[in-house]
Image (cartoon, rainbow, N blue to C red):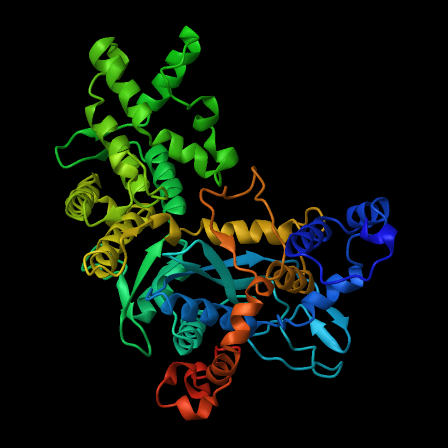
Length: 521
């Protein structure tokens, strides 16, 4: 109507901006078709590009994201509320491809070094194969935002630890309290954790390190979804696992249950089928692992042994107990509903913290007592899944003491510390322009920048992670009014001269970062 009446155009409504930016993010051709069909009522693509022009999303710390976070912190402080954060870190593979655009090369290794590369000095540079992304999740809020990314080829434990210290230092400057860091369970991440000062091992487990500036404890977690898949893999391939009572935990009961269902044509109120036995074809699918470690499967095995008295389920008590414990541990590490009535899925609060701490102690003892051939599971080559669960349980217990027992928070949803939030961000990156499973460094940078604006995306149901709560990406544009109120103080904090803080934060000094010859800064 506005277009037909030829009235002067005002500012676009926020809802229209969200729709336009999201539609163009998915498909430029679809956006052009819709815009043409509705008489050019949508913003011109050049207008959308101007919205993104204010954000500098080169590799390194995203300054605009820090300004937005600090505005949120000040807004919460005005309501006498303190925000606590979880920092999630993971790498995403990109296409090994270099491009020259406006005298700037894309696709080379770049650790926050914003320089122009000419044709004479780029022959000896390494081409990047992945990006290391840092995503900040508000534990007592419903938003998340990427704060940094680095274009990398590979990182030693010292280099990755230095990047973590740089990001922690930048977040500390704006007053962000990082309680937890979550990574997956690959060997390089565990090595990085140990380099930072933790001790991720069965003997003398230390699941935290000291913050490089505030000297507060920063707790570490290995993503529970990755750990449950590793435990499922070990459970299937290692057929002689025993518990503390010397009872055998066997995979054959899962096979017998599925064969019984196929033979009888009935399901015992479980979701497992032949697909769960052939998990090697879909080893990245978390759902297949979680559905095996469920109370319904344990109940079905007990029903076949106790009520039906089937011979093929004799001596399955230890197996059903193992499945129940893994189910309860995973539920504890993925609580996301404040009003949940299931005890194993309830958030941690003052009313149940003592019970949950007792359960955590019981689960830790149970995992430590598992063994194969008189050797503990947490000491074997296939130990990562069990060791990761121990680390998560110890960290959750300590975080509950830090946040709940001291009344800094009324409740704790442990799903906020899951790596799913970053996996869904990667899924959103890949959906740029339809679907691009292997974007180049330049494509990643552009998608990263656009996701910080009005774009509102839904997670694909067949991706690595499915959204389990309403934690959304915090858009920079949506917080502009709040940011303007604190602009002077924010800019002053962000743009402080590093030389003035050299003694305070030696972790980001040049001498510390380039200490060894193998460092490629």
